[in-house]
Length: 305
Image (cartoon, rainbow, N blue to C red; front, side):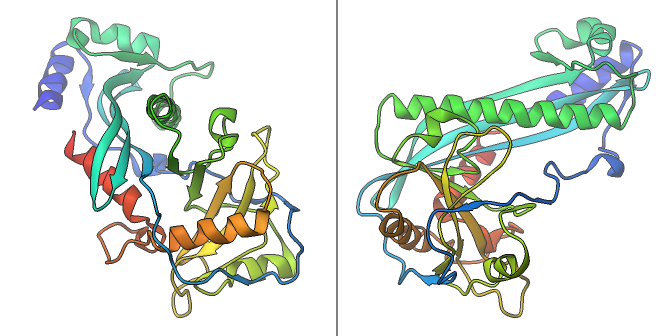
């Protein structure tokens, strides 16, 4: 109802209402590339069994964020977008979850001139102005808005993570890379779980071995090389059998702070994460790479909209 009222107010302000995101703007946020990694463990054996999944022996927290955005109007050819962005940390103690930190906001995004054109229609709405040197473009501006939403989601995730860390030194499993900031990448009890594989750490025969890991096996630990991110240790883990599916089915990549006892720690964390596999299929297209604790955070955040 709030968006319907906003669209009507923007229409009265002389803007053109909008309801959907053009298909041409639905691009991937990550470019496919190979970034050769530096091995921390020996290359042989490349395929390493980790054993059966073992549940965490103490409370563990999960951090994730969600975002949703849709156009509500255009000022000339410049779109205005409303974004719902949220992040939370949920702690599992025994069989129950509790919310340890929550950050959420709804914001209108657009070029400064588009926001100004909306005038009083945006009274009471938080706004975020896009910085753009190029002329307005109805599709290009949606790419800019999407990038701004992703950046803001990352900021809310870091805020939620800091709120959790002020009260706890316990285990924190983050949905996504932890290498973007030293505050996570250097903490010995923070674990990043990456479900996307556009960026790959090997090529040739090593890449084939990496993508053909059997279920319950991991790759050697390696040090990713990507941009100027904080150094981390990483490895791939297969959660579910991929045979009969595709090479990425059930494959996740794990990041932790560099440390000692590399092999033992990688095996132990892998067993813990195997025990976190979502036990039943869900409507989520990423079910095969989904951890139950992360799934709980996402369900909680959607219920908070």
